Amino acid sequence: MVANYKEEVAMPDAEFISAPALILRSLSADPGRLAITTADGVRITAGEFAAATYRLAHELIARGVTRGMTVALLTGNTAEALSARYAAGIAGARLVNLYDGMSAPILAEIVTSVDTAVLLVDVERYATAPEVLALVDVPTVLTLGPGPEAVGEDVIAASAHRPAQPPDVRIGPDDDLGIRHTGGTTGIPKGIVSLHGPYRSSFDVPFGQERAAPRLLAATSLAHLSGVLTDLTLHHGGSVVIQRSFDPGEVLAAIERERITDLWVLPPLLYRLLDHPAIAGTDLSSLQRVVYGGCASSPTRIREALMVFGPVLWSAYGMSEAQYITQLSPQEHDRVGHGGQISVGRPLPGVEVVIRSADGAELPTGEQGEIHVRSATLMAGYWKRPDLTAEVLRDGWLNTGDIGYFDADGYLYLADRLKDLIIVVGGHVYPSEVEDLLLTHPAIAQCAVFGVRDAQQAEHVHVAVVPAPGQRPQLEDVRAFVTAHKGRIYAPEALHLVTEIPLTSVGKPDKKRLRDSLAV
Image (tube, rainbow, N blue to C red; front, top):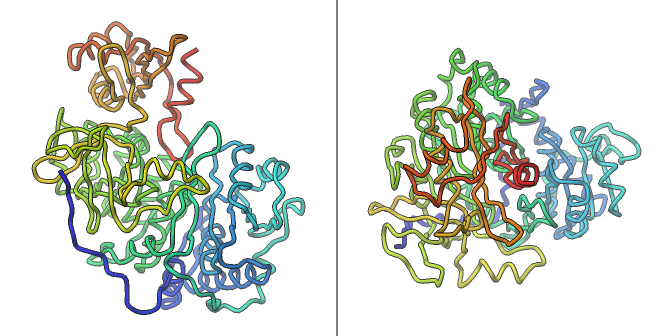
């Protein structure tokens, strides 16, 4: 079945304006409005932020940054990092974020592979910069504010005398916007090349203009989806409150204190909010949109979140290779599929989705298979990897690597990532299906299911469990519970009791870390 909502998003007929230029134009048009509140509580107006960003762009250009060059950011969640991102964009540079949580050797490999001309470092990463810099030879290294001389010169101070107007740089829709790297933990991650045109088109999609100006809490990395939502929020007249990292207590406090309207969380982070003791006494009435996605979610916990937060949950399914694919509104959360699974919504305007079998044949409604996507927002390809690009991009269609199916009304349901499939004797096990079931067990608060290979390369189902308060689940009981509800092949062969489920730098369960530390 193909789901296709053909409300095409039209690009303007006038001269192309890139997303960074559009955001800065919006900020400059209303200079007195509050744009950013930093993690230290500093409040920055739209005019102040736009002027500083224009000056930084002129300084980068004066130092040789031109269209097609790569500027890499070794930064955290700071206003300076955000300004650097926009400045590099309007200067015409290709932007690369060096994610926190990756090892120095991997970051060094990325810096080299993307042909980095300028590396910008902010205060959040000064401590780790020397380890990375010892492994690479970057032509220009600069700091975003006062920093160690060993790292580089303060480029913001140097830009103070530059003009606070847009630079005269012509950027086209087919120019590189940036390279986003997958969260790989072995070897160098794949670099996903995005272009200005596809990203710019997302700014023409309605972003809640029927509401008052949104107030976004960016509590996860600005290098990921929080950065995208920050872009949209600032463009549409809103303001952003930045936190250094996700701490459930601090998030709840900020929602009440700052009257936050919008929040983005991955499902494991949403569960941490639900489990925090302060949530019962927190005023959540300002929230209008809590967007979740990025990995599989538990229907049980999502229904709990609906009870706690009210009808403000939006499910978003997407990926770096395709941007947004589907969306589920609060009013649609009663859509359930096999085993009570909640849908991830219907395809967005201009996005086509088809479910195919392993041999490429299109599957009918209700049948589970690989999800393929076609839209104007697909990636240009993987950086310097035409072989990998050819594996997933064919005839304009992207094979997402996800497994799912459609219901009769065109709502999409996800089963799991194809690569997370555990092949056991007797069949296939999708970890999310077992995780959803285990979270209904009274002795289990959190869990993560993963496959482990033995010496003969046969796979076995393991589960890491955070017990519910006062509980200590046993393997025999858990196996019997899973067998009774799903069948013998789904039952875990090993149970690991842990105090918490480790997360990757983007907030997803770190199953590689669990596998490496527990399955020995």
